[in-house]
Image (cartoon, rainbow over all chains, first blue to last red; front, side, top):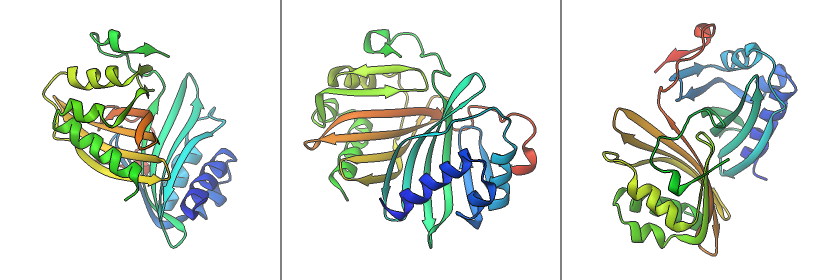
Length: 126
Length: 126
């Protein structure tokens, strides 16, 4: 397992544990994270920790579905059940000197959109 | 560049070129792809090619934002402008014997959701 994979797995384990000091320890102070789906940018370790800490309960348990990692980068597909939705956080993460420096996280939910009509002959629903 | 990265980059280059025979040549006949956001599964190379070929124009130009690859797997963050939206396809891909065997693709669009109220103090909009 690369260091980037280990740090990303630790991140999600500590988020699940609500271990906010532990989460902070994995991040550079200037850590920035972009959430393209809602067009939000979170600048700084403290804001990222606060965003997670303040996120309305209930959510979890977090389940890391897969990680692909190479060099200082990792991509992760993570499931986070929350309320009436099953969220997926698909993230790309960059390490610098062993801690997370940047991320892009795409938050979606399973089945949150209806497919447009006209392609039923090509798909099965799940 | 790993073989998995090369195949995923070739895939998107050929999709952009509408080179459907070239796309098919990168896939196993039993290639399967899941689209969790709409809960759709595409079973088989021919259906995957048809789904892309039949997707309503205009779309493109495709731009591969980043790829993380290791062993037989790759994750890619790909931008596909289309109509009034700027789509992002975030995919995880598995190779078998040099061709794509499985994928999970999360289709989202930049800014397609409004953030819930109450976290404006933690974010900037972009």
